[in-house]
Length: 107
Image (cartoon, rainbow, N blue to C red; front, side):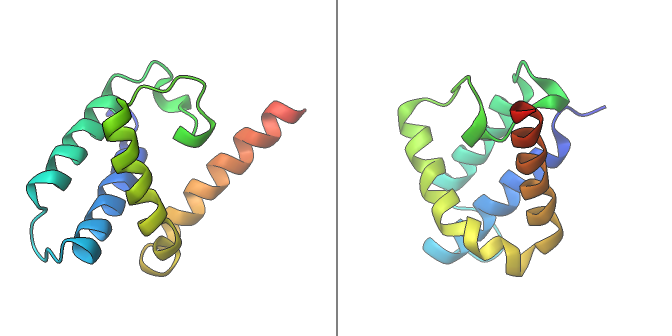
């Protein structure tokens, strides 16, 4: 079983959307976005929470370096609002995961 496969798919889709919108790439990612994708997937592979990983926003462990954290924040700001129109199923699953985790902690 691939750890965090759904999270990886969402991250890759968000970075691809960002690269297309900001860097005007069409078929392949630019070098900067390719590096960010590899970094994010590596971080997910090493996540100690495994399949129970919270969304990064809600995580108690911040595993991104400051530089990569800033890049990912830019990606999230740009891609997040657009994901509902381009990948609605992934977006709804992601929001549900965050909602479920939030409610679990408040009980």
